[in-house]
Amino acid sequence: MRTLLYCLTILSLSACGSAKKTQQQRINTAYEARTEATRPATQQPRQSPSAASTAPTRPVDVPAAAPTVADRSSGWSVTSIKGKFLAIDSTTLRIILDMTAQMPEGGQVNPAQFAEHFQVAYVMYPDYNNRERLGYGNIALDGPAIRKQGNHLTISFDVKRPANRTDLASAVLLTEVTEITSGTKARNDLPLRFRGLRLSDRFALTNATGQEVELRNYVNAGDTIRLSDLANTAKRLYGVRYRHDFEAASSPMNTSPRPTPKSLVVDSTLTITTNQPFVLPKEGLYYFTEDTTAENGIGLVVADNRFPKLTRPEKLVKPVLYMSTSSEINEMSQAQDVKKALDRYWLSLMAGNEETARRTIKAYYDRVEDANRLFTSYKEGWKTDKGMIYIVLGPPDRIQRNREREVWVYNRRPNVSEINFTFTKKSNQFVEDHYELVRFMEYQPVWYPIVEAWRTGAIRE
Image (cartoon, rainbow, N blue to C red; front, side, top):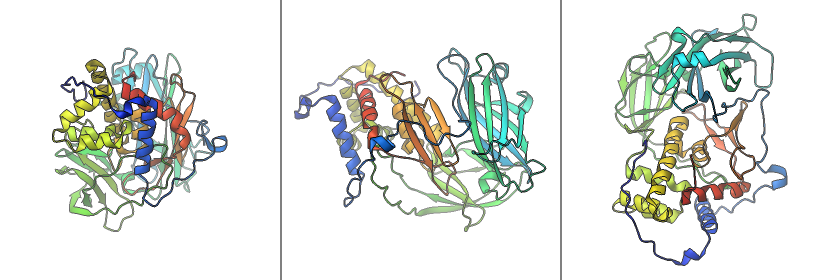
């Protein structure tokens, strides 16, 4: 199992006054209390928008060609795609796609299998709303274009700015991965820049040798890494370290204004040289710039050597807040033996059924690990808005995106009609892909029953 397996101790459950409440009432009350706790003391709750006009039950801002994740229900499928570009010169960009693909029986796909079962093509447009083709092509899936990297595949190819568009500063690249037999498609859209390049457009996190680009915003403490470009440039970068424990996402129903972000205090400083290996030995948030006045740079979360897994009991307690009451979290956090308190928590929820507890624990922390791997930005992935939705509901059935927002569509859940979660893109100095959830009170009828399913062990992976 990928998560910590507990030695569960059978407990006798004592009756209490709250036992008369139904499970639904209990979880509703718990979430309402936690939502209130996140509001400033002087802030009154804002009335939720009317269901008739703004209930989040239909897709919004759908681009002309909505990027999606392929159907995971059967056959060969692509289960995730992440993209990045690196500038080669003022006219050419190197596109790097990091993807995971799955065989019908569930195993990971190697490069030869991928080339046999999939085709990859791209089209470059001026913008999301402009269908003029600036360039297009098919990707030859052989040689250095595709390689295995850990448990995923990396595909790389070059695209050029059109020779007759010297004024073109930016574009959008739509890459389409097609499963040959079924025709099922998975798409990725990637904004491109040909001018006004940022530090992260020229340099990327790589492994110690500089040969493998890592499309993630985290590293493990003590790892040897590089910040590399395609020209092997030696450039001094200035780094600062922040030691800050960022808050986890609040409830999707918490429509009160977000609290003012707290100022970050610099804990230490350092300098590195690009394309040369270095080590970040301490956990924290690091930020690298070309000079101390630069407006953009490269942010990295340095986590313990087990991340994106969580294994230490004091860290395992925190993500369960999405399915817990504040009193349950406080009781576990303040316990002398956090591990035993966490064991008691899970077993009590499962009415003493050890097998159900083990299965639910694994399912929950598998999703926490996936959220850390997929969504870590300037803070751990499980703390982000996307991470919260992913942990509770799982991967979306479809994703729709434009330049300003991303919509996750869930329409294949038993007993749940189509529901959508909209994330708006927000400016963030540490990362480019920072999104915040648009919150609605109307999520309650969907959210509470799913949380209750976690608390009773009814979730099935």
